[in-house]
Amino acid sequence: MRNKIIFLAMALLSLAYTSKAESVKIDDFTITAGETATVTIDLTNTHTNLTAFSLTLELPEGITLVEAKATARYAGTIVVGNPVANQYNICGIATDLATITGNSGALVTLTLQAADKVRPGEYTGSIKNVDFITTGRTHIKPTNSTFKVTVEKGTAALLGDANDDGLINVSDITTIINYVLAKNPSPFSFINADYNGDGLINMSDVSGIINVILGR
Image (cartoon, helix red, strand yellow):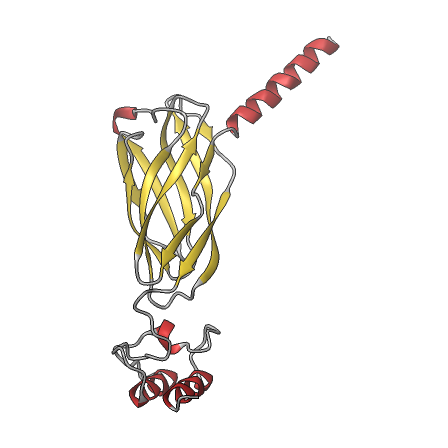
């Protein structure tokens, strides 16, 4: 009797482990402010009968999802819900309950856009609430995962050029003052206007630009 109980416990543990064996991740990547990058959601799976799925993609602020497409591994349609607080609900709807092919590789291709105002630096994104459905209607829920996003300064960025005209002069000071006064100046480059790189636009940035104009 004791041996039967031990065997049953081991079988249940093995089943639990198998249910968690699937791994969904995005590799760390680099994106330039103002530009796009293509990355993939990769799946490593032990089950061979996975069909539909859903997950939540959380991106750093200032980075948005432009497009999500299925790869050759998945004969289905990718549907993206409206973002909420920079979180996207991504669903895979299989064609005729087609299963995901292979046991590893890219499942979904993502096109991401970094806004001009994103400060260079390292940020963290995540994939969570992952839920696969098998052809037998069993739910497989892998654990959450995180990835690092490195944002690089855009080639068009010119610190101090608040109005983005390629020059640093008194017009940039006026543009920043109008921004501080909530007058919504246009054109306006946040990343250029934030001269001291503290993530804020204020009179400290004006002082820095004045020093540039005066050659200090």
